Length: 120
Image (cartoon, rainbow, N blue to C red):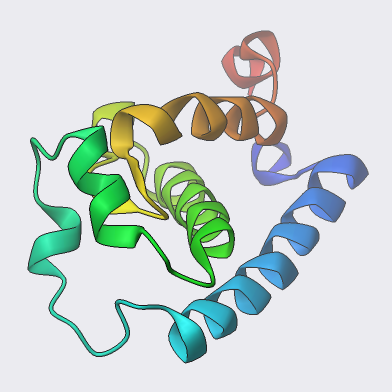
């Protein structure tokens, strides 16, 4: 039972992530240039940074979209496990390769140290 427990700082961080995610998602849904468009363009692998910037250039909520992508990617990996290679596509004008360092940093804050995971 104890292994599923999170300490208070991690719980606060998860609560903040949930709150931020809702706010960013609302901004992107209301004002994003991708509003109402197919996801095929945004999630295909092999997109270059120049193409990503072109897809999202001029978008009013580009920064919110990028932050939302980092939160979504992090929460997906935290909940479902798997490799960081699951992070794909273009969001906020950034390719997955550019988002991965932020995702890794946030995962590090959310996951308990390896010693604690091994003991559980």
